[in-house]
Image 1 (cartoon, helix red, strand yellow):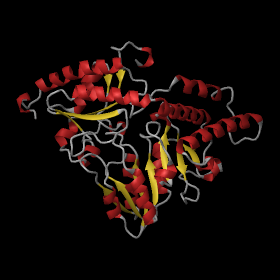
Image 2 (tube, helix red, strand yellow):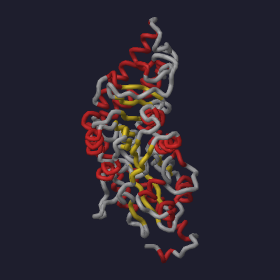
Image 3 (cartoon, one colour):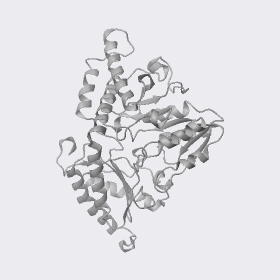
Image 4 (cartoon, one colour):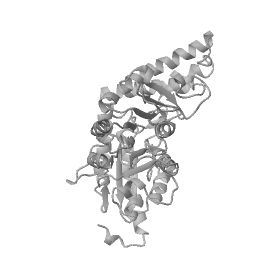
Length: 397
């Protein structure tokens, strides 16, 4: 169990919202808060020690992305990366293609750009949550400048066919951006194979610190920085580098690559599948993210999204929290929102079922005991809520 607690104390299954720092990450960061506190832009010894640490982290991120070190730009996280990709490339009269299931960092930026004269097309997914590349192709126009698609959906975990979409973008002569915040560290990245020009990640989704992230920016991509004022990051992102955060991101990326090689995510996927199978035994329960054959489509190894008929998702989140289980009704960025998940609605769920859906996202450090505890408490919580539901439990389908 995480954080040294007993298995019945707290089980955290909201990893897609954020993850705890791993001990190795804390250890790597520690010297750069006090001992090696220098500004990485200073030329004296203290500054050069900080610069060396930043350069090492850049090397690690280049390995994670499979790119050149000069193509790595450090920033404050996924939101800044997504905003930079869209605002930094698009101008009045340009055309943007994105999807209706993107994170709000992309969707809200796209709406703001639309108000400023950028033409925007939002493409809907299949009922499975997958994007059909053919619909992306059909949306292309002569003035399409950018296509922006997420790698792994933050609510369902569904992995998108980004390589095929990348080929479509290349054929159209459009730039291609990937929001890889939920995919980084869970699936291998190779920006050349994907064919993207820009890619965004955030440290705190992969056991690194909050408030720091990185972008891949392919050499020659004419993206303008959101922040100006200094020559930091080769003039692509002004602002004094967050050295401890960057060091933490580098260490988290290093550990993430190790996990991709040592089978850690296969173990997590097995735990996720056991959890999913157990919960689907409940009457009136189903999985969001299945194909026409009823089987799950490819997803991030740690994520499942389930609906529980005749239950309000928010009420179930609260009930489970009281029983020591942390889960989510969807994106943490929309916590407390009165409207149901835009992702699930775009997949064709009605509002009632969308509101009855929960996301379970496991940490890399999840255990069998965690799953056992959740499988004990969820059925009890669901049945109690159904018992007080205004709709008779006998109508469950």
